[in-house]
Length: 121
Length: 247
Image 1 (cartoon, rainbow over the protein chains, first blue to last red):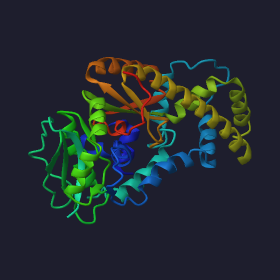
Image 2 (cartoon, rainbow over the protein chains, first blue to last red; image 1 turned 90 degrees about the vertical axis):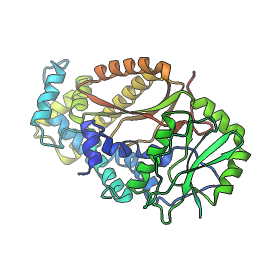
Image 3 (cartoon, rainbow over the protein chains, first blue to last red; image 1 turned 180 degrees about the vertical axis):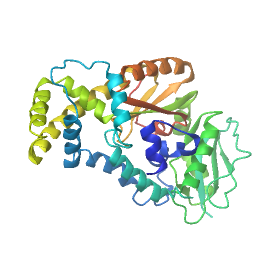
C-alpha cells in the first residue's frame, strides 16, 4: 500500500505526505483563468469520481453483511463501553481489516494517484 | 517561453519568495509581474509539465508560503499563460474581481475537514439503532450467514443504514463548524471519507473552530476519525459563486 493509504487510515498527516492529503484541492480547486491553459492531467479528474461510483457495489454489500455477521448483538440494547469493544476489534482484526468504510476503494485511488503523480520521484 | 502562474496577490503583499524555487527540474526561478495594484507570482513553464509529486509540492509550497504572510489567490495547479504579457493583460482586464476576491480571503485560512467511519464500529452502531436490522442479522447468523443472495440483500440494507448515518454525521459536523466560518464549500468524495468539507476561517474565529472540532471528535470517538488539513491557502474560496456562509 502506498503512503496515502497508510496516512488516511491511520489519520496521520506528516509533512512528507501533506500534498496527497489535499491533492484534490491543489488539482481541482484554485483560481481558473479562462484565457490561460492548463497542463494535461490525463485521468486525474476521473479518480475522485470513481470514489462515488464504487460506493454501492455488491462487494460493499457483502462486506457490510460480513461485518454485521461478526457481531453478536442478541439481547443487547445499547453498546456497553463501545470504545472498548471497538478497541478489541481493532486489536483482533488483521491489519487493514478494521479500516474506513471505503479503505479498499481508497487504496485503489491512492495507487492511481501514485502512478499519476509519480510518487516514486 | 510560456509562463507558469502560481498566485495573484495585491502589490502590498510582502512576497516572501526570495528563497523559493518553482516547478520543473531544474527548478524554475520565481519572478513577479506587476500591474495596477496587483501582482502575479510566476516562473517560466517547464516543458512537459505533468502532475508530478515534485511539481505539486512546489506549487503548493509557494502558494502556502505566500498565503502565510498575506492574502493570495492560489491558481489551480498547472495554470500556464502564453507569456508574461498575457498575465499582465489578465491582471488588467479583471482587476476589480481579483481585488474583491482578495478582500474576501484577507486574514482567513482554509481548513479542510474529512471524516471517515471505522467500518465495524459504524455497522455495530447502526445495528444497535435498528431492531429490524438486528433481527435479520440474528436470523442470518443462526443460518451460517445465509445464502449469497440473502447476504447481498442484507448488506444492502446495512449499507443504506450506514449511508443514512453518514449523512447524519456529515450534517452534524458541518452544522457544528459552519458558524465559525466565513464560507463553507463541500469537496468531492475522497478516500473513504463520508464528508470532505472546507471552511474559510478568520484568525479571530480559529479558537472557537478548534473547540467545536474537539467536541465533534469526542462525539464521534470510536466510530469516526476526523482529520483536519490546514491552515491552507484558500484554494476552495477563489471561485466567484462557491460559498454559502456568512461572516
